[in-house]
Image (cartoon, rainbow over all chains, first blue to last red; front, side, top):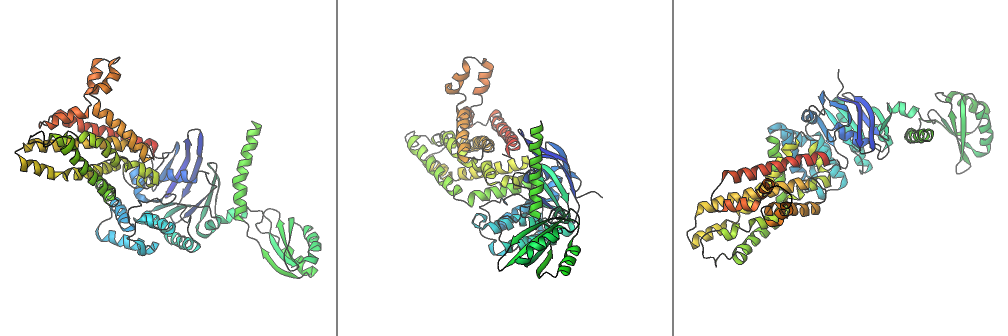
Length: 325
Length: 244
């Protein structure tokens, strides 16, 4: 079966700047894809091309079989899109704004009323329906933008930073909403917030300098961390230097990091060789030596570290190349 | 058609949900009054016609129409709503036409509100009402021409002030293209046929001929094709500029 979103060899050139460089990926129905990348990496440009706002310099985009160049109107009918910053007509109220969108989307009669009511309830904007949008808080503006994007119950939903500028409760609401809609839609969201990827996305893509650098599940992403499967021990400081020595000698241990904490305790972070699990050998050693251990925990890994690694790593490689040439 | 209607409705409502519409209409009526009665010498001319009223329309429009048209696309670009509009299932042509029609109908409303002057002249004398009616149509067509120019220019910039100033300059050239001010610039080197073509672009000469009460097919074709041309340029301007 065809994918709901198919992006092939997509590139965008702005003058001498190659903003997006040969990016390809697919998104199936029922899948939430997270777009990660530093600012100016080409995330928004890619989304704008998928949404049919910018024309690709090279490559193709198709949503549910509608090609962005051959059938832009057909593509846009299938799509709900929340642009970055959730722009809306400031002098309109959410009521008039959603009715305008309903006009354009061709929603009529009973179905139209039903959809507007449904979306307003889901997004939780009943209280502000008759205030001009320009007077609303950032959180409400964002929600009005989301209401607009899902009004026609689109098969494909693309949202550029849907949780940017929201407070933690609102972020949670938006994530819950995205998960609830994920069943029958193909969804792309872009974000800076790394834990969001773990919280809502089935798959993550990292883009930096216009290039696609990673495409996999959040679990795969986190397993790239050097802290993946690391073991952290909290123990008495006067035992810890001996312990550090002993731990270093264990097989598969790559490094041991030591950090003093308050009230005479220290934390030891034992980092394994790539792909190895060391929790069994570490706990056996702890048991044999009879150390007083306050806490023993296996680290999942640190997404922010992987993110830095992947995005900055590519930058370093690029400068290396430049040196060579 | 459905999309044009939706955009038209939204746009026209936007005029009236801000003070823009009311300020514009009041100023327009005030200025037409001043021009007609004081500068135009409506009473002194002792003629039962509205020539003093209509003959100042090109000059009024020169400043007032760009004030309406400047926000049409600049504002969309500035606030980023153009990205929203262009990712809805709407074609560029539909969006351009919908917005233009809203601005045009708004101008028509302002123009229609000058009706007391028509009543006044009928009360004072026995004017040729056909001439007056035809002049109203001509005035509206000319306003459409100005609006199409202004709409296109506003698509070129995010800055409404720049859009206003450039629109005024271009409209000014179109008003005067039959006059020495513009023609002298070309007369040194351009052949006569080009000079004729340029002078035929003059809003003033087309409007003056309509004001005589004769609707010439050529004048209508002139204004409608001018509107069509500038709106077409408008779509090109958006297409090449929307991302910046």
